[in-house]
Image 1 (tube, rainbow, N blue to C red):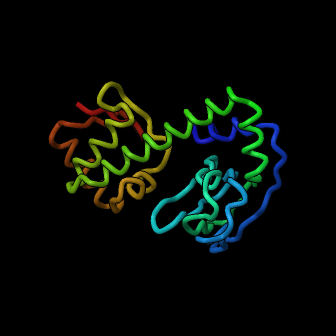
Image 2 (image 1 turned 60 degrees about the vertical axis):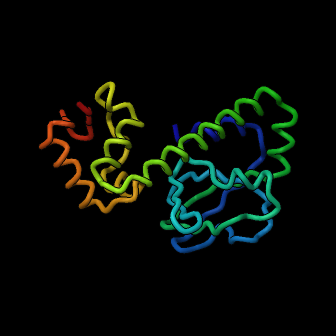
Length: 186
């Protein structure tokens, strides 16, 4: 799913750039000239958001004069640069692609709202249940596509708090883990 956003931008001439760990892709207030596809690595956006390999970054720059936050590489990274003017021209010239891209962005907003709702939950077990429910573990067994350490960070818990919450949910017969990376809420 991470590569989904990139598919709408086919045919646009791009260039690639490597970033060293700690190097900024852009800073808050820099002129918004491009959006980016993170080919490999991890970027920190602002104070707490992270972008993983395969994700689009700074899509809001299409409609802003300047980047609203910093984007800094947390590991050696490689990005593909899509010039803002070329993206806007591409979307204007292809209304069906524009609609599909808009639907993709709406889905991103929906997912972000879900994560924000999740972060409002104070108790770790409640947060874990809400996260797994968002992924469908209340209906079927799901397989996580990332390590538990990454999940903990994504939902605002330490990995220790996540492991304790999972153990508690299993003890309370609210969760089964039929295999490595597999989860099912009861």
